Image (tube, rainbow, N blue to C red; front, side, top):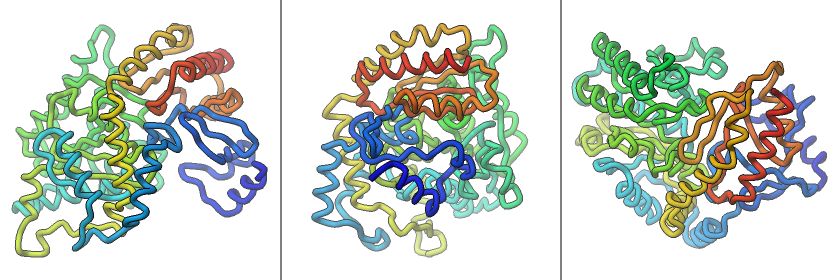
Length: 436
């Protein structure tokens, strides 16, 4: 099939996400026929290095043979069954394994299909918990400035990205935001840790004055849509203390940063904390099938355990706990163990940091930063549409980059090799030279 045929059919029938469709009059869609490892291929043989893991979901490469085999085996047993009143082996196994991996006490898993749905569940579950405890006034939520937690209405109410939020403001519950600990905002001479603690003091000031807060939701260590804003784990440590002190749930949104992306299986580990809710999606299924999980503490679970139906958490999705998605997730967890992925990633990150020295030291590059398998930097450029131009130039150089404003980031699949890292860094440096 020629690329042009699929492009025409897609434009006439598909409404693409997060897209002003009129832009595709000038910037064509990228048709993809197949994937292998870190590469995506179009119908005419051109290839693209998937440096953003297809919106941060792909961990172990496209068409991974082990994940393929696990899903194929499951297809011969059970494709789906409703999880209300029924259960099955993959969802039980996955729940047990996640409970073993996550911070102690997060023993109950509630499933959905995507990250925004996980956010909705956690917000509802938190408010309902307080209602069950006789505190129905606790319905407020706090998030960080520039936070992103999804685009359904509840998730948007704790998202602070104007592009996504403003058109729907009249539909949203108005929640509070507090200063982000993003170290790029620190004063001259102020360390990342000191700035993080100063921001935590601002959170405490808000909690001291407002007693209707149900939960504080945060992306641990990295705020993705804020331009990969990174901050010191001291902030999370202090937040854990404050939430406990003021009777507020701590929701850790690890949808993008969990599953090894920040260097540990869960970002919260780096602050040695246990949130009340841990949200997972994206990489949990290896980038194969829609799946999200809300992990909750035993205490929260017990607050819903009663004779009255109205005290139960009456929330559902048709494909909750889908067996195929759960098997993909189990295969993903197996690969982490079998390949000692976290150790391998540390070596890969060190290598990419070494070869990225010319990029880091480029006179037009600012705030080059890295945590785990995430890299980001800003480019000083006068180009009026830097992100779109960078995207187009990257495609010409066999790269899939998707900048946010003037922030360029790498978030590649964990199977990326040294030769592919060289391609990524060298060709990105070439793009910076063109646009700087």
